[in-house]
Amino acid sequence: MVKKNACVFISGNGSNLRSLINHSRNQTFPINISLVVCNKINAKGIFYAKKYSIPYLIINTKKRNFENIVLQKLKRYKISLICLAGYMKIISKNFLKSFGKKIINVHPSLLPKFKGLNTFERVLKDKEKKTGCTIHYVNEKLDNGKNIIQKSFFISKEDNVKFLKKKTQSLEHKAFSEAIIKIYRYT
Ligand code: GAR
Picture 1 (cartoon, helix red, strand yellow):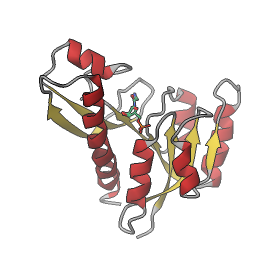
Picture 2 (picture 1 turned 90 degrees about the vertical axis):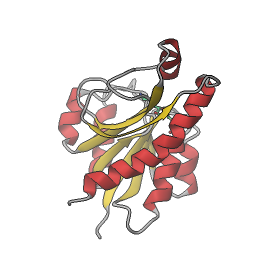
Picture 3 (picture 1 turned 45 degrees about the vertical axis):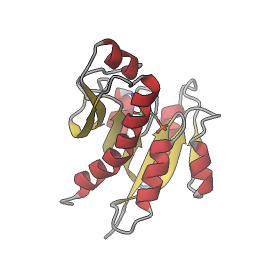
């Protein structure tokens, strides 16, 4: 099997990045993580790129030409899939068009419910019975592209923001790799 080259975009702790790296070390997993892009100089997740000797790029999104710099790198590393794994910036229409290949995102709610930020607080405030995570394609609208996979769990009385985050993230780690397998199943 010829693996595709993927790039993971992060802004924070990188637990999803770590999980994707672990899966990609398996011969039968459809992608290699060939590049990591991060928009925060102190993001903890960069540690995993360093640990596994994966090339990484730290970008300053305030620079006018930052998208071109990223696009050039993606081309150089022959990237055919971008995984947004806790990347807290909106992907511009121009970037989507110029890259022209698949971009997928992990979101900590059962989309279309609770798009945007502070999902766990809002889930609790609205007294939802269930919550979970979604892996979806990225389009020009926030948290709006076609869903690939969702995983859910029932909320218990004891759950608070911290517990919901922990439970959701452990589902995210499974869902992300399953979504990637699903995308490439018939290719
Ligand atoms: C993840 O839980 C992901 O769902 C969330 O950021 C976290 C990153 O964690 N993404 C969003 O909220 C995007 N709208 P990680 O850095 O440990 O993978």
